[in-house]
Length: 368
Image 1 (tube, rainbow, N blue to C red):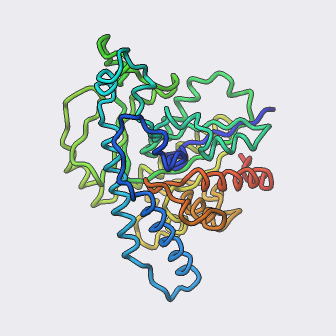
Image 2: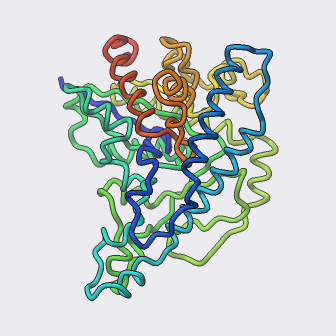
Image 3: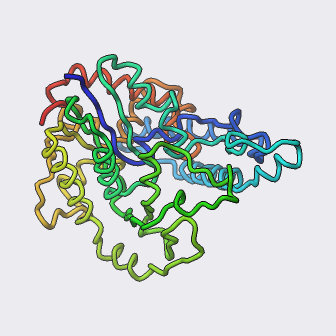
């Protein structure tokens, strides 16, 4: 039987950062970033990682907080610049300088952060993994900002739209996002609300699967006071008191465990193999809950035996494993992207690790 790996998760498992530095791919009308920004980023992140390695080797050493602060400042500058790139009116700029109407490609910013840009981008870790596995199909359903509920929705939507599930021996590898993210499923999406006058500016990119997911809006309860649930509306709703309740009472953690269990049950019902990891939360915090932040209050049977730290003690979270592999194999300055994800070089190392692990630890990965 043919094999298929289905990956579900958020921006890290999608492969955000694979196009970094993105400056050569920008729309010609996009605003430039500060000229020395990239050199500053390379220098400061290399210093941060060198400091991390030194502290790891000598527990008596303390982290250099000034370097961490500098990374935060540079990352904020990068995000502010990307916002300007996204909000530039490329249609007006094009019409002012050309006699013809622009195509959708002419209006693309040149930055890659969403599924529509990265799903087929060759340098993401999952697409590099695909090139290394000749006998296995790799499908990545991840999306930036996804909540755990959206991860489950992505898998169920994909399975509902797929008619060849029984033809594959399937492994679902899911990366559990930040517990504080919630999602809303609306009754309309961007594609439903387009009108005839919007033309190429209103075009919705992506596959039929991607357009289905346009119904889902994710948000982080720790960062928002209001929410605009639907794409094409001016309505905002005050959710501050709701979010304060969730944050102060740590209410989201119960839903997080429940959604992991739901994912397990979906895999069990379809006779899929299943493995999972957290995005950033160290596995030790989940198992021992020493800080009291991750109580499994419903005592849900979350399968910790299906986490890769059981075969690799360094795989304490999805992001930490990528980070450690980058340190051992990539120039320190070329590991982190400006959005604090991982570059194509670091993702390639992770892809090679996964390819090797899938082959050498086949009994673990393809366990039911």
